[in-house]
Amino acid sequence: MRSRLGLDSGYLSRQLRRLESDGLITTDAAETDGRVRTVRPTAEGIVERADLERSSDELAASILTPLDARQRERLVKAMEEVERLLLASQAAGRSSSAENPHQPK
Image (cartoon, rainbow, N blue to C red; front, side, top):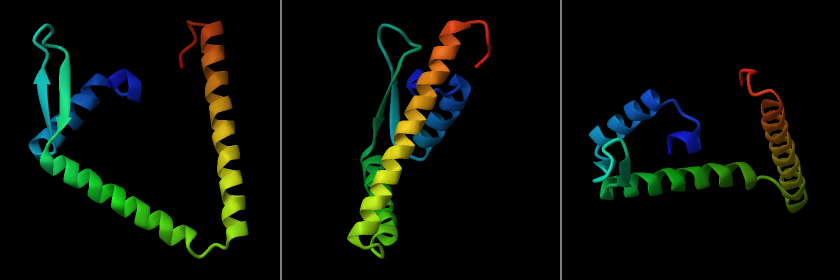
């Protein structure tokens, strides 16, 4: 999870401890390697996530509802362009790091 999210291990550990103390997740050490942890949502964590997703959907709807179909289509195309540019930027960053592995990221 740490590498996938690009997070510092200390930061991730603190966040996981907080979520666990809030009763939103459980963490268990792997039997074969105590450094490896399995993280699972609790029932309360599943409800919390559903609430957050519902709130996110409501916010998106409140932003999009005032737009007519043409405006929404333009917005979607603009968002697709932003996504393409961000992906191109990430690819360029990986390429330049590969060319000079000693250059800090």
